[in-house]
Image (cartoon, rainbow, N blue to C red):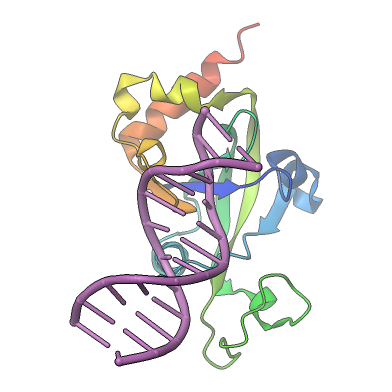
Length: 158
DNA sequence: GCCAACGTTGGC
DNA sequence: GCCAACGTTGGC
């Protein structure tokens, strides 16, 4: 069991969009970065926990918890010339790009803002908080996961 | 909208 | 294989 943080711009796909999906499940397609691809293809496993992060948002935040429900399978949007993530160099017999499927577990409401996360000493080493961090699929340690879940649970008192 | 940080491309 | 130019990401 491992833990991850997946980034998405809410203007293109938000945690609320995931909640609204049939079975609250979607294929995490469109990843076009090799390091992120390698995590998706080689390490992300069914049952893993996912922090759903809203980048380019106001404020940027962790907006919900999800879980992996299907391991890596080819990202078919790479083969569709009409898709914005089309990659003419990727071929069906040897796909370059992969996706996993995730299912919403619960929203974090209100979400955990980036500023707030920066203020948490135990999260100081988190990849998300590193200056210049751009990776859209990031590993999260068990200790970091525990801290974030605890912060998320504290949201429920009101 | 700005711009720092990072990834990719391509000439050499 | 180097590295400058370029494109993208994402906080602010």
